[in-house]
Each structure stands twice: as structure tokens, then as C-alpha cells.
Image 1: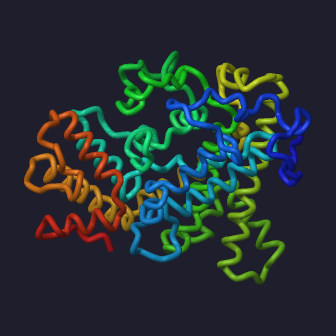
Image 2: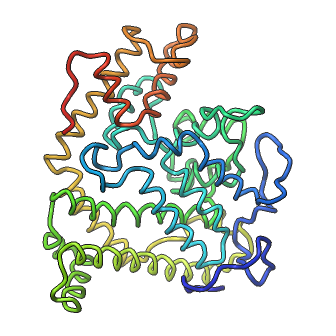
Image 3: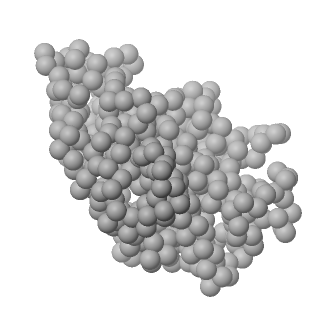
Length: 408
């Protein structure tokens, strides 16, 4: 097995056994799609999934959804789209290191944030509260709902009709959803439980290695790029990170090597080194786990009883320390909290006015709404709200209310 990230990827769309990992998730062994379709002459099933994801409406919406900062706070902060592209780059690099299916890893990275509401996690908390009596709201479950039901472009089916392996990786990229130490089936988010009844995703098992690596790519991307956004926003300085072990050590290294470097370049040099360190740690620890497990198929990965792709224990501690810093100095910064509290008010107001019938949702969203029971109406409204961009939610609130909370 190759373990160096800079080695060339296989040159063929159908690499032979020596050029790819026996434990990878390979398209010719796919468990297929819920609705059968003729095979593509030019693309593998996972390449086709990736392309459908990129051409979807939900993918375009990511350009106008918040990562941490609301859309109009600055042109250079991450959006869900730029974050997604960064995750996909890291996911492909990790998959390449183990000669896995890079297209599946990329597809999972590109789709992982489809279900996020406007205003990031603040919007999700507000919508989950509104849906408390109707099954709750979970952004990962909403991602699955979007690609299996809400995207409506194809003549023969709703959703994108993605491969089983792509849906599996999306639903359980963080691990099994049911079984020992997890929830019961009845406790699952409603969209996941409902879909699993018609298309068994084996929610008790781990996903393939491509999905596990895509999930780690997400962690690596947002932890490092949130530092960059926090620095740009002036919420903290690079010197404030000196006591965070992984970042502080790299800061000393950069300043020792480049004593006259300007602050912007110092920030970038520290962050890019930190990304590399985390990526290489995942590669080393995953390679060690693979050596111990000796898997001969993707099923060995799924039934290992634990994640095979992971950080080392030392890196876990360092990442937790970094997350703690970001929680205190960025996510709970008074400036961010004020904006996000106001954003939650916008979501709650919109849900309330739609659910009470005081205002109608635009277009087809209001069609046949009166025929639904409370559960169905609430889920339909949450689908509409979750799909909104930051800007659309603000404009809709301004249309329906005399006063809209300030998000500047």
C-alpha cells in the first residue's frame, strides 16, 4: 500500500489490483441505486454521483450560506461553498494516499453540508427548537432528505438517485447510527429513519474508508480555516494562539525561519503547516490501523467495530485544545453571539408566521399546505427554511415583519 501523499494517482479509470487498495469502496461492486438506471459509457457510478451533486440546486445554494460570518460581513470569509471545496481537496488527498476511490471521497465531501440552514449552526439550533414537537431538525439528516427527495429535476425520480455507498457515507460518516452505544431506531432523525425503511443503509455498521476520511477532512478544514476567518475578523490575533500547543509550536517555527515576514504571510504559513500536520497524522494513524486490521475488503472496514481512519491520540488532544480556543474566542465571541442570536430570531419568526398561516411561503411551497397535518406541515416548512440562503431569509423577514434584527 502506498502511504505517501505525493505519489501519483492510478492512471486508469479501472486500475488493476496492484494499483488500488483491496479494502477500498469500488464502483463496479456498488450495491446500486434505489431506482435502476443504465450505466454511463464514460463515468463510473461514483463519478456520476459527484457530477449530480455539483449540478444540483442545493450545491449552488452553498455559495450564499454562512460558515461562521453572515454573508455581508466581508468578501473573504468562508461560505459553505468555499468550505466544501476545501474539504473536497483534503478528502481527495487522503483517499489518494491509500489508493482508494477518490471520486467517492470527493462526492461525500461535496454533499456533506447540503442540509445546513441559513446562519450556520445558530440557524440549525433555532430550527431544531421550532421542530421539537415534530421530530426535530438535524442538518445531516436534512442532507440525506435533499438528495433522496427534495431535489426535483429528473424525469424518473425525486432526489438525485445516488449510489448506496454515497448515501451510506452521507448518513453515517461519523459512525454507526444504531446499535450498542448509539440510539435506537425510533430515536433517529425522522428523514434518516424514513428513508432507511425503503433503502437499508445498514445503519449499525461503519461506513467505508472513503467516508471516514471525508469526515476527517471536514474537521481539518473547518478547524484551520476558522482560525483564518477569526484572524481576518480581528476576533483574536495569532499571538493569542501561542499557548495552543500545535499552533504555538508552528508559530515559533515560522517566526524563527522568517523573522521579517508580515503578519498576513505569518498567519498563512502557520495555518498551511497545521493542515499538513493534521493530514499526515491521519495518514500515519490510519496506516497503522490498517496494518493491525489487515482488511481484505471494504466489508472488513465496515465491520471493524471502530473507526479505521482517525487522528492519533496525541493529535486528538491537540485538536481538542484548538477547538476549545475557537469555542471561547470565536464561536462565543460577543460580536458573533450577538449576530447569531439575532439570526435565530429570524428563523423562529419565519417558522412561526408560516406555521400559523399568517403568511404564505412563495411559489409551490404553499400549494396543498392545508391538506397536511401538523407534522407534515412543520416538516414542509422546515424544508423551505433550511434551503434558504442567509440573504433570502433576511429579505423574507423584512417582507413579512415591520422590524428585522440587525445582523451587522
